[in-house]
View 1: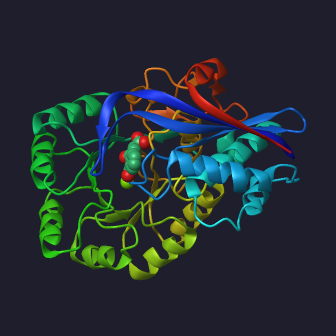
View 2 (view 1 turned 180 degrees about the vertical axis):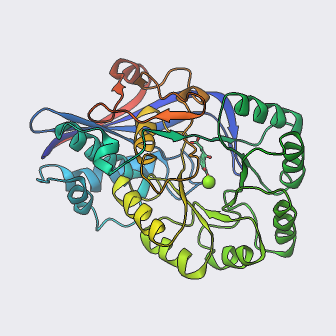
Length: 371
Ligand code: OSB
Ligand code: MG
């Protein structure tokens, strides 16, 4: 394959439900859709699902666009490669900027799957025909509204419900949800909002009593040591998300026993190529993994679906149906969950058709680079 043209489409979609995390609230999202064209005329689509603000991680939509346009795409354009692993290696000397990398890596995988006539899941080595989905609920206006939301998602068939927590919104809401749903698979995600002090450890011990499936990312991304100290004290598994940005971080997590579960987000790890390697390495270390999300539009969501088909993804993903976030998605049909499962597509390529008209109607800016 040889990519001769690439376009970055900055696209805005409104969210059907305002989403509040420990850091901020959002009503709409701007993601960058990456369209690459091979010399044969075939196309591949990827998605840079970076947030607009540098709160989840250091990147923004603006930084991702600049890094992609000035460093990643110039490395890819005109180069010949047989497998996406080789494409990924073309920009290996660029440090960090994993969200930007992931969108281009994803486009290369989609192009490769299309050109080799296989579903993306098969190209990745996936073995499942369907993947179990969970949902992620933001911080709601009241505990009653949260309990209602959890009930609605369980009624919709989701296999696991994750609650966002933050200091001041933790033990009480969890207690209320657990009382209403004594046997459901529940977990919490703090997005690193707690300081590793005595007060926070007391909160984590209080949460430990509610048989949660995991406590995700209580402390700051680089703080391996506090996660290890907490994990040694808790029955509940600690799950790492933001902390594991590259494979070396996973090795550190394993060596320090800083958590018992890994959330694999291809965006955070720089794409499908690295996500695959993390899956293999975690499996070898006996660490169960699940596929996290970044509120992806349909293209990134399709890649998450394909990734979730790998055998090590034994816990329900955050890959819910498109309708949980978007009234109309950028792919047709949208990603759907039925009884809490997403069916893994069996058609070649991404497995969903990209709705270029809808993309054009929601585009804020485009940037085209040629060989
Ligand atoms: O930590 O998982 C997270 C969204 C934005 C930033 C961080 C996170 C999330 C989610 C999204 O929880 C879950 C989804 O995409 O459905
Ligand atoms: Mg998380």
